[in-house]
Structures are given as C-alpha cells and as structure tokens.
Length: 83
Image (cartoon, rainbow, N blue to C red; front, side, top):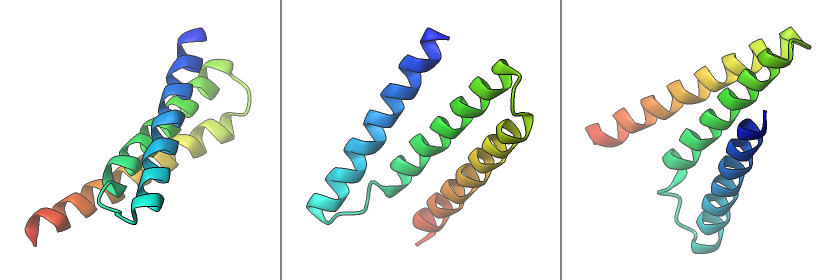
C-alpha cells in the first residue's frame, strides 16, 4: 500500500510540474505527455480502489476514465505524426 502512495505522489508531482511549465511558457507541446501521466494516475487510483474492495463502482469508473484518456492520447499522437 505504501508503494502505491509513492507512485501516486510521484505521478501527481510530474503532472503538476508539466502543467505549470506549459502555462508559464505558453507552450502546450507537452500536453500529450501530461495526458499519458494523467492516464497512468487514473489507472493507479483504480488499482488502489480495487484492492480496497470498497466502492466497486468508483474503481470501474477510474479504469474506464484511464482507458478513455489513453485512447485520446493515442489518437492525438497519430494525428500529430500524420501531419
């Protein structure tokens, strides 16, 4: 359980750093990487909720949200590479 807390904290710090840098520099080219880390964070939260066994609906919602964010990320990368 301690490892999941460390992973969640690390991912949150990375997301915050990338978001703040994007806003300050007014350069949103890091948006795909930020979405990747958000998707990973949602997946970790879903795994944590599943291990707890409580709130099965929320863990399912976290997994679905992580999959949707991941698909949006893949789609945006494909569009970026094709242009």
